[in-house]
Image (cartoon, rainbow, N blue to C red; front, side, top):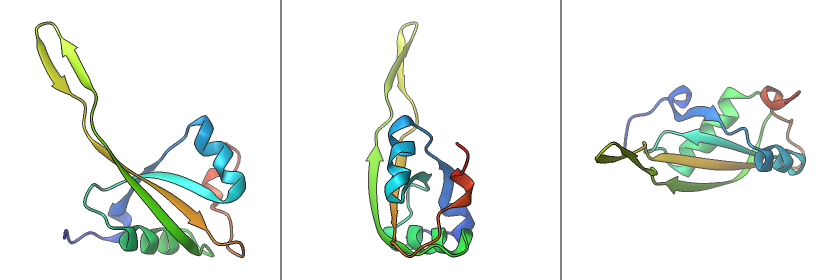
Length: 99
């Protein structure tokens, strides 16, 4: 397991139409470090955003897409995505407000 600090775990938010609709049920999506565990993701969200309480974390590994460039083929980088469900009494994440 990697020695990750909480500020290294969350890389950036996922801003898509589906993730914006899930915010009404207090679900937030982030791209996270590939070696981060669910427990580490939970702790990082609770430390970075004051007043939040994470109920559960779902993660998924997304393989890179195959891309062709002239005769050579390659892959885009693989990513790990986490969907964080906040508890009912938790504060909302202010970073996403106004999107």
